Image (cartoon, rainbow, N blue to C red; front, side, top):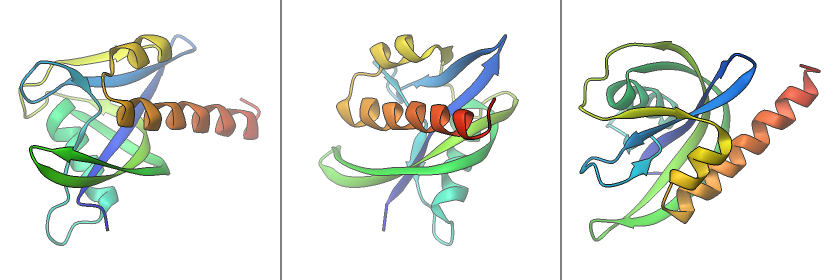
Amino acid sequence: MPTHAGSVTFRRSHNKLLFLIISSANGTSWVLPKGHIESGESPEEAALRELHEEAGVTGQIIDRLSIKAFNLKKEKVSVQYFLVKELCLSQPRESRIIRWEDEHSALRLLPFEESKSVFREGVKRIKELTLDNNC
């Protein structure tokens, strides 16, 4: 069972796919939105809550992605990621900087291999869904 939930979040703007990255809690790097799964909360609910708290984004889960495990402050965590489409943008509750970047820029800015890997998976899934729907 994952301890955290996160998202690869995208939007379409002028026929271009853009991806959300946010500043880390300490502001030293760019990350994907993620956080603890609260008691009684599903991974899906946690991913959407964290997305809203950290980035001010209301989203819709499109698909489940991989679970990634890594060490965070001497604690081993596992993060269930989801592919999320942005529905609405408001003011984030946390003081994070948010950026919407194209695929290549976002990938270049993400410093951790776990994030890069799940990001690539999300991009691949969007392309598969687009082909399946003839869009």
